[in-house]
Length: 382
Image 1 (cartoon, helix red, strand yellow):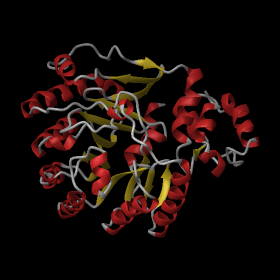
Image 2 (cartoon, helix red, strand yellow):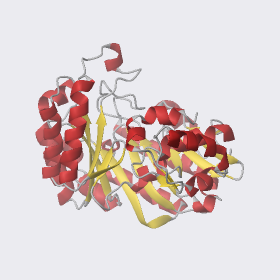
Image 3 (tube, rainbow, N blue to C red):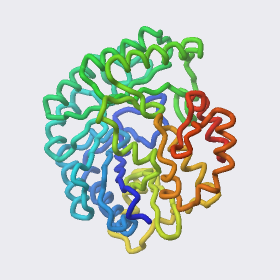
Image 4 (cartoon, rainbow, N blue to C red):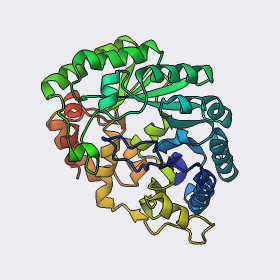
């Protein structure tokens, strides 16, 4: 069964220069460059413990996320990628993405990252507007963001994503559209365009800013869609927009309920074997992670492995697959969960009667109304 399930690898670099007030990711300030080498050792020791879950499969993608992976040197990224390739086969067109902030010091490393084998860069622009960047606690400027994109192109990165946020404090519709227009003018063909939300355990949660109301958000979304589409950029997932042929292989694997190994402090993975579908996570704090994986271990699995109960698999699958604008082939449910479609037949019929899922039984796809009320639709499978 698992031979037919794509396998990816997520690599978490948990440090950042400064924690943003909206960020609830596992990131830690005050990166000490002397930790770079021992952390790489820990990553590869961690990966050694997960090789049995690969089941002979090749990697379709590798994603360096954070934190801020671009705090690491080009030599460090090269060493990690070489270590991965010594342990696992890479698909012929394996997508290798690295997240980067647009600060000038990090942008100077783009040549080294490209030389190391990274073939896709994701730049955390968030906004080109200096006023909004300041309110978001970002340490780069709009000009630095534009320069970072130019440097990435000159380094040979044909595939670029930029992150943009909307629904920001004091942001007008025109402000939001201007960010998108600037990205389009820079030739960006993949956007992660997502609404600012206030999450627990963040500075914004403790002192929440005043955010725009739905009266502003909804027309902004409508006008943004028209702007993207006019540039040949289409929405293919809730917050992902791309030109033809530029969709993220790594993220598609998540949404199509593929498998992914995960190494690094706080990393989360999903693997499938003859016993079922499992999720696992690594200890969050870098200090504890370094202690745990400082030397090769003999135990085959992390004690944090959790098997997903068969009764929970339909919700887990739909939570990912229905985020895709085009949906997924209905047979994918059986291929990814090893469950019969019969277990969700009655529920699917009910959602079709409610007008939330398309009537075509060969495809699992939300209607326009279902996509608008996606949380409600997904809850129906819980």
